[in-house]
Image 1 (tube, helix red, strand yellow):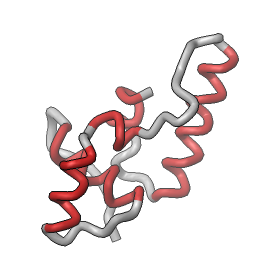
Image 2 (spheres, rainbow, N blue to C red):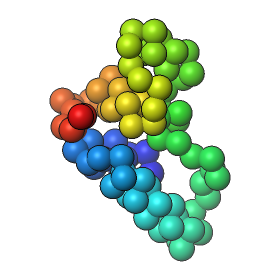
Image 3 (cartoon, rainbow, N blue to C red):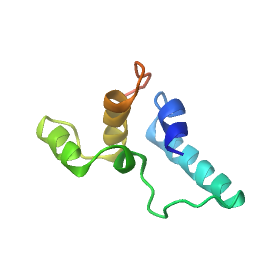
Length: 84
């Protein structure tokens, strides 16, 4: 799920990212793939101290901003995203 989020979610707004995540979770349930009930893409990819550091530097404390920060800092390629 993390690889799919990292690869495909960058250019989409938060509503579509949430829909995509729910579709991935539904597919995992159908295929009987084990996953964490409290799965969060950004929390899986970054430690809480990184979020605090980003907040200190001015990043808003919302899920969309956290996902964008993870995409920018953890991605192996140049990120393609839209951030209002």
